[in-house]
Image (cartoon, rainbow, N blue to C red):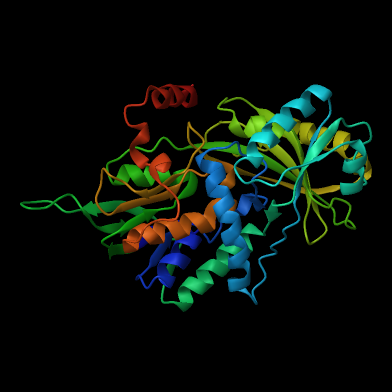
Length: 393
């Protein structure tokens, strides 16, 4: 089998497929974790998800992440089950946040209400006067590039081959009398690889890979920026964000949306986000967006006003119209499988995605119902056509 993409999702697919005894080749056009994975914060979250298929997937993946961090040892992927804190500035915002937490609990999420005093205990450096919030102890964090590299290292130890700097330019399908159009291999910039199965884990470019097999996936890039501060003593204990973040994650607006997200790293830097906008693959550094993120972060953590930023980076989330990934076999093409479209949740959902793909590849029952993640759910969708129009303008 050939896996297209060496981000954290493709790496997880390689790890679980190799562990299941399959022959694996990973083909990556750039470098390991050189796309969305290398531009993310490494979030493993349930706090930002409403009840439904994605939350169920996230809860399952969090359990797998705990096991996986131990399995990858002694390699260090900076797995930190530090929890998250979502805050509301107004009573109205707190009421909405509390309502969300109530329905999340019914799905298995641990969500602990916190008043102003409780927030100060959780995060002593938060701005005073906040209406309250919710503590999510299940949230965690990893270093995403390390995670992808470690997963691929383990896959290699089980015989997987990894080809970086190699682009997939074609997908071969059987033709002629008796042929069923099944995939027979991929054509790459370095030659042909025979394969009875192809896993499309190309992140933001997964739509292009699907098109090589003759099918449509309406994946689009959703740009985001992150600010990085100078190294500091531990001043932010959890992933902390405001209630607007949840709404922005679920939004389908193509325009710019920002919300406050602040979290520390093991190295002492603080990551500040988050922005979302659909502008194609425009990598232009937007100083106004960075200024807005900085101002929002200072409002939440006033001590940041005197802190220097050392860099900023940006990446592209693989966005789908319904905010759900595509996972599993493509019913339109025999031998084609997908593991893509996770938007900003790819790191968190990577291990369960890889495990599910390995299950269907080996003919075992997947641990999660995959019907909500079918690849053909967008066929003949007017929403897709409308969005393509938005991008072209």
